[in-house]
Image (cartoon, rainbow, N blue to C red):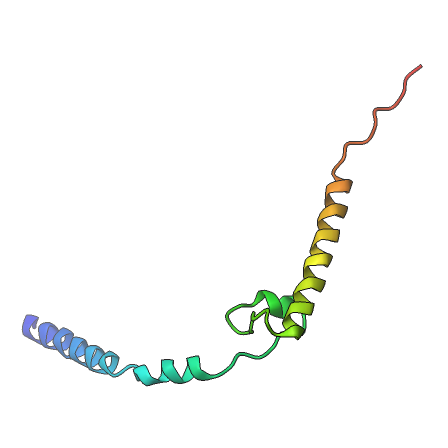
Length: 92
């Protein structure tokens, strides 16, 4: 019985190691890196640096970055202004 368990574990180990040994082709990584990333069109896409280009030498990306940065600064100012404590109520 113990021999059967040992053989089963050994067979499973061999099968798993054989399938993971050829898991990917390293050339696929090179092909992936050769493909240009698309140009972002929204601030959300601009923040996704994994899937979209962040090359600010591209005029479209630079303009979008300036637009998104301005919007973020305006939102930060608005949030900072709303966190001020209200003036204490006057009592008689």
